[in-house]
Amino acid sequence: MNFWETKTLAQMSTEEWESLCDNCGKCCLNKLEDEDTGEIAFTSVACDLIDLETCRCTRYSERCTLVPECIDLKQHDFAEYNWLPSTCAYRLLTDGEALPSWHPLITGTRESVKEAGVSISSYAIKESQVTDLEDHIIEWLQP
Image (cartoon, rainbow, N blue to C red; front, top):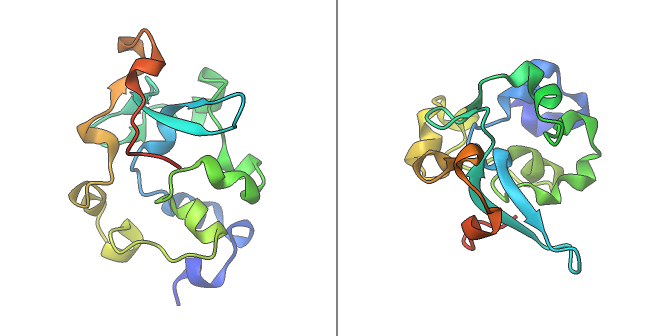
């Protein structure tokens, strides 16, 4: 049995937890929340710390200090993961769903995320290149 099929997120070791991340980069996209409805909209604008080729944070261990808005998922209640993209392993497992067939833990390769078209590397831009986030809302990517 695979660890993600037998353990809850809370039971996972740090190594297991980190391996769930598929490095799609979607959690590093800036999001806008409608104050009236609570609806979340994703933008194509990513944090300046992300490497857009690998979709990995270049300063991962320091990210929450360098970017105060950065969220450490382990510090939050799993029920709050509804803002994550629907393809996110943390959200899927919290909701009792299986990992997708393209997930690196299933395929054995990190390239499967790009091959499946799930990675942000083909469309994201860095926030330092943007003036107004509202100009970069992407309708097709919603939580």
